[in-house]
Length: 260
Image (tube, rainbow, N blue to C red):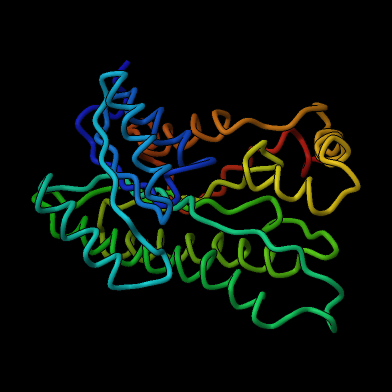
């Protein structure tokens, strides 16, 4: 099924993790994907993999915290494709924090810059690009987290950033609806997903990598970590016309973590 056939999707953070899984699946379902990332080597590898499977993909180098990068990215996308239909903001960082009085301000600002400012800038310029299309319409998909719903000790910066992404996304959805623009905005709140980010946390926060993975796996009532493909399938749904009545929502995919 070509559920997103002929759509153009820009994916920040598309060279790894959830963004990479989304790029693969959207391309397999008929979209032309634009992988925007700082990691050029990994980005080009994803493009080559998608092309090898008959899909359409291209790479652009993008720092999500730099507004001019976003301006240039969307100018290029519109010049090459004449439209943009989907924007997936998957770029993000996680830095373990400590007790509030011991938290380093520079690390706090770094998390906010990537996780919040990056989503703001990406959304701002995605909406502007969609408005310039012959048929102004599209789907904004922002990656939040269950940590934007429930807190954990020592994760204040990450939790605050993802909570900001959730509420910002709702405001964008209402703003577009108020102007009767058919541009939808939704957030996905993943639980503990087996990505490079989780692997890094498992290695740095526990005595062994195996202990860390086991710890995160056991947090879910279903008894396993999520996979990037679990989240990519939700991204596909929000990118497709099947979710046309869905905007301003949080899609929680967490193996039951927040049901307790």
